[in-house]
Image (tube, rainbow, N blue to C red; front, side, top):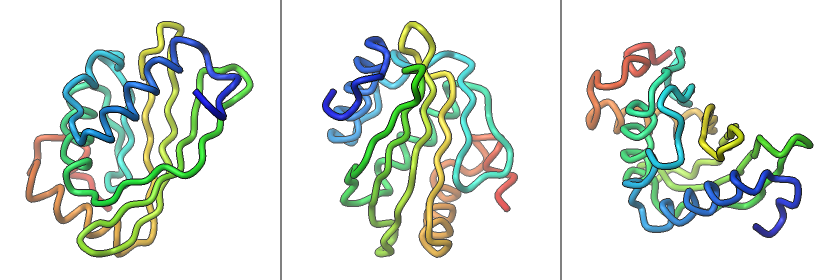
Length: 145
């Protein structure tokens, strides 16, 4: 993948699948690149969750909520197991900027996924729409602060 020369080859393959799913707005294959006990940290929840089901549910809904998703910059750590993706999107008519921290294992499976987003009004719009869609399905969603 261009711009990520240090990323582990298995992680490159998974990241390419990630970008293809985002472009299609269909995360149906997310389980195939994710460890079953992935640690997921949402930008709208205080507590983390530890299941592929939580990540799939949250991200499948988020990709439908976000409009005009664009990735801008990518960076990796020296060990080739971590990538940071910067993105922008619209949420309920509000412009948002965010970053995703993704850590991969040796097999290219996502073992940790953390997203952060700004500004506050865009994060609040995301939280409100997610609450309508998943209403308690993600344990951490009930801890929105």
